[in-house]
Image 1: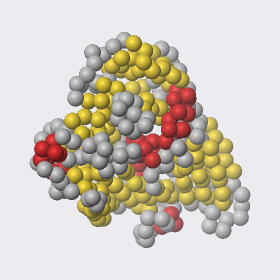
Image 2 (image 1 turned 60 degrees about the vertical axis):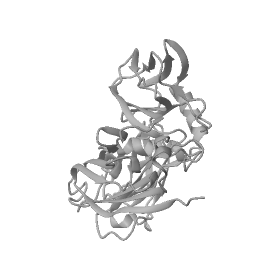
Image 3 (image 1 turned 60 degrees about the horizontal axis):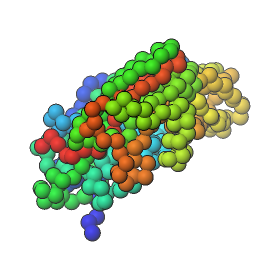
Amino acid sequence: MVTPKLVQLYKNKVLSDSGTETLPLKRNDMIVGLNVILRVQNGASGNPHDAVTETTVEQGITKMEVRSGSAVFKSYSGEMNRKIATYRNGKLPGHIITGAVGGTWTGFNNPLTGWQHMTFPIDFCTKQDPYGNKTGVIMPAPLYDSLDLVIDTAFTVAATGIATGTVYADVYALTLPRMERVAMEGKRVLTETKKADYTSLATGDESFDLTLDSNRFLRHLYINAYETGIEEGVDITDLQLKVEGNNEIAGKWGIIQEQNALDCGLNFHKHYYMDTGDASTVHRSRVPSPRFNLSAGEAQTVPVYASKAGDQITVVNDNGEVYYLDVSSDVLPGMAILDFDRDGLMGNMQYCGVKDLDLVMTNGGADAAVQVLEQHVSKAWGY
């Protein structure tokens, strides 16, 4: 037997506040997965997250890719990366969201210092076969002349946002020893790439052509829909998959979400520590149908209370008291997944070597930002 190794590739790597960073990855061994941990310091007046798109690590990562030259294996926003990981593991990856004034960083688990962090898992093996021993799905990195992690950042630098020059990355790889070249050429890769961006309409159906390729199998199809203040299943009400014109899968948004939650054993919680100094804060939580628990923090005795409208959670604390907010959800927030490999054995995936493969969405409300991502299993390519 061989032993997986956890290798630290980058430690305290400084990234730009806004721009593109290319981090070369080691190609000595095959890669099971990457863990990218990013942290940022809040501004000198804190980070209130009030009635705006949250200034979090997740929202500051506009694109994260793993690529070798023109061959792109992973490509998604920070938010979509973490949603995919949540479906895989049933839990939102590690994070601290804090509104405290930025101070001296003392570690990942102290919100009082005003540093936010989030973990971005990039998996090349499935949860059911975590080392690729049964299915041969893994990243055969030694085959490639280059392999890069590319991160696009766009952080809001301000006294009430992120302090300039404080974006740091730690990158770890879980690896398995390389094999003979012929054996690695027989491996398959797990890819996730965006297929479409779309803005929902008030009514009607919208059809999207999915990738056709005789070397690929569609394992998961991720559909994300978000509009601030809007509940689940309002802007997109139904989904259909058509194979060569035949309706193979059809279901309401909410029913598909419920099945997704059962399949992954979902236990979704998003945590906030807030020290805003404001009497009222509106969190655009990006959880369309949230449940939440609210409590006073740091020896505060004045009670606080909250109300919600869609994903917007309004916290009222008359004298600006510190509070903790735990946001939970019965379904994966804003996302519905068509899963063609629910048992993880890869025997029932959707073959992409067909004449026509379409996703059809039914619109129920205008102005939602919709993304469609495909997860494929395919023969290794690009070397």
